[in-house]
Image (cartoon, rainbow over the protein chains, first blue to last red):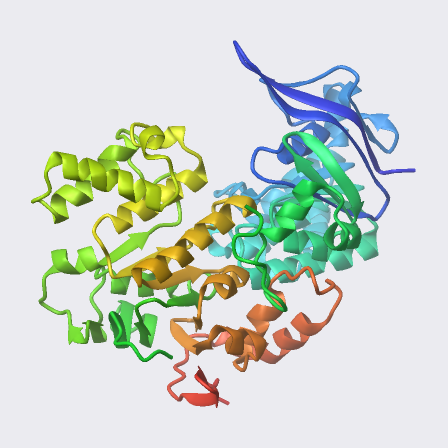
Length: 270
Length: 300
């Protein structure tokens, strides 16, 4: 069974005079352990989908009736507040682009782990400290950094800490929305390699959202291409790259300068 | 790298921050030249000194060591206004580099008034129309608009038109496409290429996106911890990187033609790990590793 099934998802941003159809009848599945990429340009609806899966969307975003988001068979759109509290972090955890800036500046790293672990599992201070140092180890940060404050750590370290917090309750699905976009490529590569290994070890699935198409092909098992709210093409990463079916996908590749091999033609993709 | 005389040259320039006891070299013995009709790319990670190099060229910083040369003459004490006309900048963020309270016409009119005060109002109007056409925007439709009415790509075209308004000889473009979508990005890169060829502009293209650097730049420099560690013709440097940092950087750049599981990155990382931790050490020697291709070897 799929970890995530999105079925006929439509989301509108409702204004006083106009309605903007941000997501139009989108359906896709993510299998256990699968790395699924969602690609598209600014405003295509990819982050709107990510927010809906975590039930983090707020008015004026409105999910249209008939839409279903199933996580392990349970419809996320039907959950009440209490059920949501146990659903978030435990089933689905999300890393944002600016997540490294969302750590509380006046709490130590240990306190921030304790906050999540105590709230969701009632874990004691000493057990939480033990679990936190294990989790830091997963993302290659020495346990002595537990006593540090966020400003004492680099952006890459802070982003890795947020990822470690996201893994604290062994979620089934990790959503990464431009999670490494603000980082240098070397740091990005280190973090994504770690995610790649952890996914194999812990078995979680990843919904990977980025505008970096080269990175998406490199990382993903399968990719969905979004255009103006619609999922226009879906396939394995290699098929999307080597044999794109949709005109828009072809245009995206034609406008992407190459690092190696033959360069794209000037004036292509216009 | 080119037979023409450079417009701008940095000659062993250093910029030092910090205290006398703890000196931090934001730029250390940086030398390069910008030639008419050529693009030089400057790549490197955050904090490597790319923007410091741009600020030194724009004369926002004065070099603590070394000289900045304009058409072969040291600029120190020379006219800032004439220099700023000749050397124009295009910034990363097209959303904050235009004034939201003014129309596009106003943005283009101001440099014309400042640098060509003799122009009559009809001539200015014609010059604005010509500039907008040059960056492939419809003059009648765009001139009366405000920045918020334009897309990111259109705004970046306005930034380029504004730079061109004063007939510059060199353009310093600091991450001009990193905030734009893929399909819009290529249009801006093509525009920079056209300007370089048609107007014989010397372009410094600062970026962390090495694939786009390969697309626009004849020559490339890799900066690391304030120093240019490898430089040369783009195809040679990217095709046959010799400095351990360049090799690491290239192995980390996402490349759809390489699977994520290949181990090149780990190999390069293990080679450079020790050196990364002592990043501020000077690398004074220069070695030629190919035709027009140089590195500063890491100290053993």
